[in-house]
Amino acid sequence: MSAKSLQDVLDRSGGTVELLRNSQIGAYVYPVVPAEFTNFRREVTAWQSTAVLFDQSHHMVNLWVSGPDALRLFSETGINSTATFPVDTAKQFVPVSPEGGVIGDGILFRLGEEEFVFVGRAPVANWLTFTAGNGYDVEVRKDDRSPSRPYGKQVTRDVWRFQIQGPRAWQVLEKVNGGPLEQVRFFRMGQMNVAGRQVRTLRHGMAGAPGLEIWGPYETYDEVRDTILAAGREFGLEPVGARAYSCNTLESGWIPSPLPAVYTSEELRGYREWLGADSYEATNALAGSYVSERIEDYYLNPWELGYGSFVKFDHDFVGRTALEAIDPETQRRKVTLAWNAEDVAKLLASPVDPDGPGYQFFDLPNPNYGSSNYDAVRDANGDLVGLSLFTGYSANERKALSLATITPDVPLGAEVQVVWGEPGGGSGKTTVQPHEQFSVRAVVSPTPYTAMARETYRAGWRTAAKV
Image 1 (cartoon, rainbow, N blue to C red):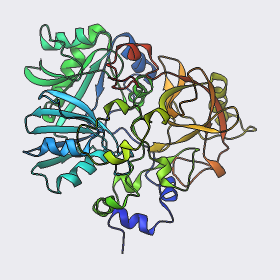
Image 2: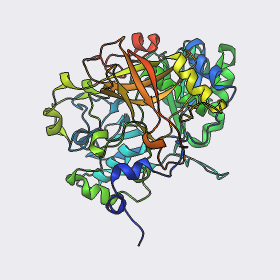
Image 3: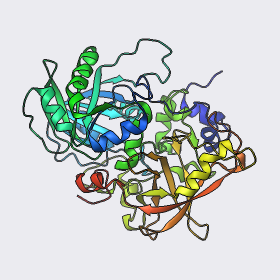
Image 4: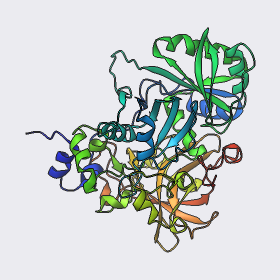
């Protein structure tokens, strides 16, 4: 009999780490949106020089939650305080497991007194959907992400979701709106006109410059997109393709895909029995040079991911007891690693050097070859001092960068080594070919790495600063 749940899959596997390290899911895909509209370098540099249109309509889950217990659901599952959460505001929502490991994160919008939408990756949406069915008076509707490979099938969503970002973004927005537009505070919502329709907005900033996220009914997707592109032409607005999209997180400092910490807690057995055998959690591809036999060693707590300022003990929530036992001062902290140019050049030259060593392929601009990436970071003595969690190339900074979490005794400016490639010649993932490992020198740097983002973001969002 075939496995029906994540728990079935785990029970039949030789071990959770082995299962996920040999996942056959393939490369992570940003669906539907073309890989490039012009070229990824031009699209990346536009968000620092002019303006860009990010199309976020397809790669995230929309989880619509409404009802008398909606706020209680989010309060009892999130580390965030909901003591102050007015209508027309949003939070970066972070739930943890009973053991204190982060399950994931995303943006939680409060649309009305009893109406919310969570927008993010599958692990959090799955956890909220399951929990909502256990004693909460709520209605939940899940609008799943578009298929990674639709193969010509028509794709539709509840809403389209765009972001207009960059130093000239406000000029584009006001032209689209047909007049001046109120600059609401960060993570506050407003309204604007697009193509004769009023849509909701969120003040946001993925690329480090002022801008808005907007959304509306999917049937108006083409008309709205065409209107924005036409208005933005005189301001140098560039549509961003799937290749460039992943680069913004390197500059702004968000670690997108930690391993969801749901595989071990006995309290979560019922959840694992509810999750399907084909769920994100069952097929997730674990990749990188860091290997431990214990899946718990891959779990990350809020402080390690830069979410320490979100942890508020003014309410009861799943995982509170575990987090109260943690000393934040001793935890790893989020940083950016700036990779050595000469070492990156060796990686890039490897595929055309038939007599040299063959390294794990370093694709541009996104060389990550798993869903959750964990590369070992070592100091001059070879000791493990952290984990590199997301790697790529920034055309703005002209550097290879990775987002990492490292021990508190490693200062900014220190040189470390990121071990690139998997031990033993690789794993059974479809994204891996037999290869040798290579240690890349890197300098420990701030996060966000881009000065614009570091200096203009609200403290405590993607920065490690406290509110």
